[in-house]
Each structure stands twice: as C-alpha cells, then as structure tokens.
Length: 312
Image 1 (cartoon, one colour):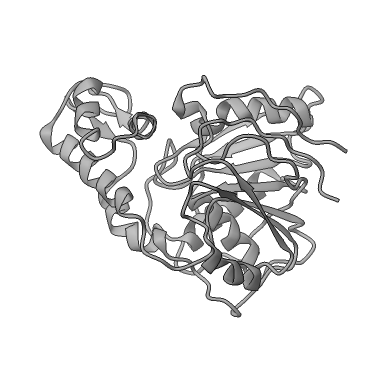
Image 2 (cartoon, rainbow, N blue to C red):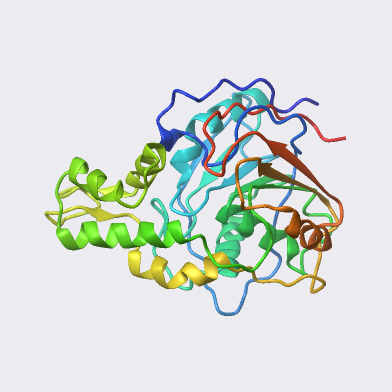
C-alpha cells in the first residue's frame, strides 16, 4: 500500500511551516511504525504534550497514526502543512507534538531524553494509538531512538523507526545552538518590544535569514495571552534550556548496552555534519537492521517535498 506520494513542495512556505528537516524526494521512507515506551523512568513524571492533529475523512483517529517529533527550538507548527498532506494522502491520522519546554507544551524538569520519551509514551497511551509511524528530526530523532532502545519495549510494538539527520551519539552540541540561547537571553534582558528589534539582535548571532525566522517563532509578543509583560519573551524556558545543553548533545545509551533490531531508516543531509561516517558503526550497533538515505540538503532543510512509500 502506498502511503505518501508526490507531496506538494513547501519551498514557498514560511520557515515555521516547513519541517526543520531534510529536502527533496525521499524514495523509500518506512511506514506504519508502532512506537511505545514500556517503562517510565523513576526520575520523571510525564507531562501532557500539546499537539496538532489531522484526522482523515474516514474518521480513523488511532490506527496507523503518524507521530512527528520536532527538533531543538522547533514546534508542532513546523510540520503543520505536511501533516495535512500526510493525512490526506495516507488516509491516516497524523499527530505533530510539542515536546516539553517547546511550543505550547508545559515547562518541566528534567530536560532529558528519557523524560521526553516518557512524555511521548504518555501521549500515545492517552490517545490509544496503534501501529504508529514515529518520525523524529534532530533532537526529536534522539527522543524517537530512546523510545526504540528501551530494553523493556515489547518486540511487537515498534515495527519501523525514521530518524532525520541525527545519530545516537554522545557529543557536544554545536556552538550555534548555545549562541541562540545567548541571543534570546539578551533580547529579554534588553526588554525589546518589537519583532524588528528582536530580529536585529538575532542576526548578530545567525546570518541565515531562514534560521532567524525559525528562531523567531518562539517569540511571545508583549501584552499577549501568553506574555503579560510589556516586553518580548520567549516560549522556551531559557534557563531550563541553557542548563540542558549538555544533555541535549548527549544520548542515554552507549553501544552494546541495548539495541533494537527492527527496520530503521536514517536520513542524512549531504550538506549536514550531524551524521558522518564515523558514526555509522555506532548506528549499526544500536540498530543492526538500519539503512541510510542521503539527500541533497542541509540540517535545517529548505526544499520540503517528501515522497513516502511502503517499505517491503
């Protein structure tokens, strides 16, 4: 059964409506995954995640759902346009989530991959989802891998896993992400009131205008429902995020500690350094039944035209 095909290009969409992931055509993206996290880490109480849902005309809101996890500083809004296309073409429910401390989801500690995975499990259980496909980009990809690698996960629950432009490795987060936190803190401390002023500060730290616009989706304007102050604030809790930077660069498992033998697809951007050949053995140690697709794109992605097909 063909699941997704010839989705419309989103090149002309605002950056906040593009998935912060990879581009162009993806010839063999896995489908019909079921992801779950069988046990709840003792140090984490799950929070209820905010989400966007697209329910097909047939009314199915549980079976074969596609669950999408965004990257650092992202949100469910990054996937809103593609979620509609996915649901229409697949005739299946699509759920794009806000991970904790992002978008409209609660601010909570700890900001760890085990806690974020527990939140996703909580969502899956409350929605009674079954046979889901789990797609995660960047930080969201590490959350998805954490779900899959949980040793208590029943083998039949997870059939396929899709990880966009991230590897299951422990490393330092790229310096630009830390600089984004610095820029956001500076904007709040300056008590700026307009988007133009905030954009001017952000461009001192990031020259790519698309990335600047992406970061600005986290802005809360003064005297708004979510920000009663008379100056700009940010959706993400900056102190939590700053303290979590080492954890976000890390990963909860080490090779040979656990593995998941189901079908796994890694999507690498040719112009991205987030997956390189040094990581391939580690990826295979964790996911022995993995394949890699390389697309002509960077980490953030610009030409978002996906072609999803059934994996046989």
